[in-house]
Image (cartoon, rainbow, N blue to C red; front, top):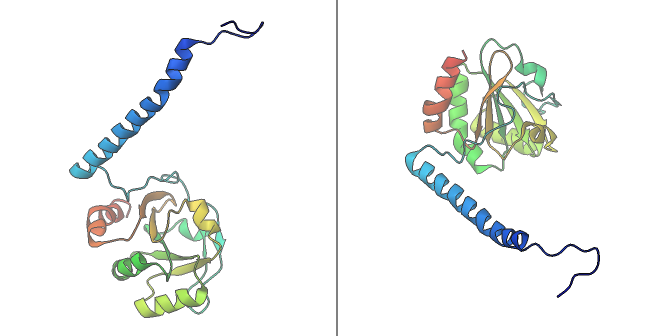
Length: 196
């Protein structure tokens, strides 16, 4: 079979490479999956330990309105700088079942003197207020992020999600999911001592 004038002859090596490409991708994906399973078995892989591009950086600039009726001031990025000790920023919502589960641990941290700042994420203010009245209000400041724009800037995966800000105003830790007794003892309390 002849090729039209000026057209390149088909390259059999290129065709074979294109056939092997999907197989190579499947092998790489399988190896990654097996590595994840091995990490889950040994405890080296934590699916909730989601990395954040903000670690080691200052939080994005933001200013949020206060939660009316909560008797707490509004929250802005400036409130996270120059603190005398590490500060936790917790994104929560009244419709979030894991937020209810982690709330007693937040209250415990607040009673131990850890400064907590809350961001009510995509929640009706009346519902956020009812949630805090029902479960207690551990937050020194609360901002309302109804459209979720601030959460996007922080790289939020969902609620609850908590960030540790050190005295220099840098994000040192992020936890996507509820704070539990295990997370408190294994991760958060050592970090609070380290950055105190």
